Length: 144
Image (cartoon, rainbow, N blue to C red; front, side, top):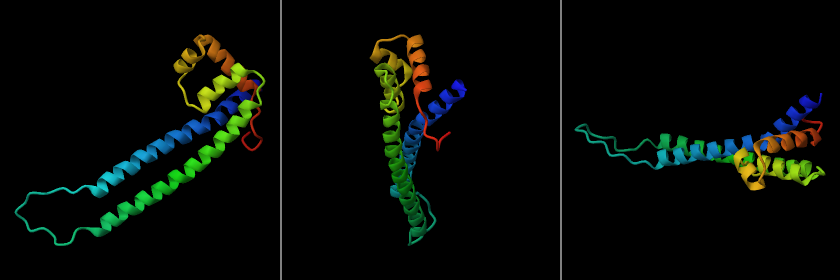
């Protein structure tokens, strides 16, 4: 039971990291769409060119950009709300070392090596403290 509980706590806390990664991915997609929309390429050809550019293609690209930006805004709202929930769960822990490890991992999205260096503890210690902290996290009922 405790191992299952630790996994669900880890999954719950990891949601913010995945949302953040999806936001970054969508931002890259928007950047690519913007580059596509603003690209003006000159084609060298003997064939006569069309007098009117394909405005519908430009319009479709702009609609895609707006839709993606709206998705990003919704994701950011969810991320802010989720981080507030995670912050409350972590603050409920009594052990400050456990709190710090969870904050660095699930709110700051730091790699384990950076956490070990910042806290000045070994790999074994960071994983042990992390595991204990996960056992002490009380996951909201809606998640379980």
